[in-house]
Image (cartoon, rainbow, N blue to C red; front, side, top):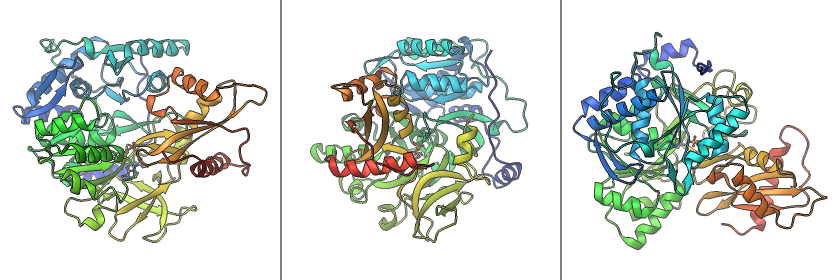
Length: 558
Ligand code: OOB
């Protein structure tokens, strides 16, 4: 028997009432959303891409609805029921959309893993969410996900927990089975007054303390951000969105992303891999009008477009977000790709900022946009949480109709990450302009942003420390002209042990421990002594800063 979802910190009733009255929160659930859009736009093209077995696929909205129902039936047959959590770790294949919509239809909660996650993370997500099933694609990029499911299951069993059922979409037939009696695995809505305000899925946080925390999102809050994003970005039935980033990321999922496009009746084109070659082929073939990229990918597109002169004439808007786009690269989106730039500064916890499509270049090229909603509350504060003047750098705090009030099952981190009156401490340093636009100037969280992928220093350090030859370990981000930051792990070896190639040994060790591929350090350095820092709460943070500064001077930029 799986445990029910635990209670999560949520909006006080006074705020709920305000967001309902303002029309931000509607009663629409994800099951309603899926049913309604698949019927409303039935004949239009919903999803183009490849399936788990590499076949090209083009689904209408009606077909997507059938596929979602078929997925729900399969999940139900594996024992998944309403309210259950299901960890999904699929690449950008069409089954991803069918599974997520299928889970929504049945009122089960997707937990959004990434295909780059490995046994360590997936065990943690399955354990924390008490997942009924793990959805994978048999083998991908040379990695055997079925074997990984075995590993996850063994780990959970040894901790006395029930392992998740394996759901392997690679074994699904290319045509859906005829619907079963249940029709779609969809049951009636839960018997609460506001089903849309129940937690509908768990998204992953970038993490600052150990492995990613789980972010509880509701249909009411999320669909509000999706509707507003779709409107800000001018989405409609003629929108063709290319999804090159991992589809489960909050950015390509909802800003406005896949959900924004499905809300508006447009088409989603899933790129199997993020290479410019694949992207350009799809843009030419499907006449894509929009794409969302992280800065390194934008740079890769720009340099590939200079060499190959692809036909990108259909491309109207290129969104860039997830990490700071440099002011020097920003103008090249128009100059080289011929598209309008939209900067997106968002977070899976909630707040999303966009530069608007009709704003002057001065704002679009140098700011990371302004909040979606007039109900987004933004405070830029100093170390004592006192508000600073516009134009001055401070820490960004936010609260609003689609920003969570706490992580799932994370009492202690919640005390650090949220103020007593419910503002989320984003960990980002920004300057706010009088127009409300934000410029991201840095970070005061112990996190590395490697080309848009977030990694908590502490997570890598903790794992390195579990190696018997390591006395201490510090993980820092060093400047990298392509990724923005690359991961450098600095280790202090146990003094009495002579390990000739500790760096190689450690690299292998971290991989074998089941760490996601994007978290494996780009560089491992051995130092016999670490600099002295003050003792106290921030000593590790000081040490990270000192080492990062020292190494940035010593190691040639990547
Ligand atoms: C997006 O979401 P997450 O949860 O992977 O990461 C959030 C963090 C932010 O707190 C900030 O540190 C960084 O990523 N970030 C940016 C940025 N966009 C995100 N830093 C500088 N400039 C930007 N434009 O990354 C995300 C979620 C929704 C939409 C877009 C991005």
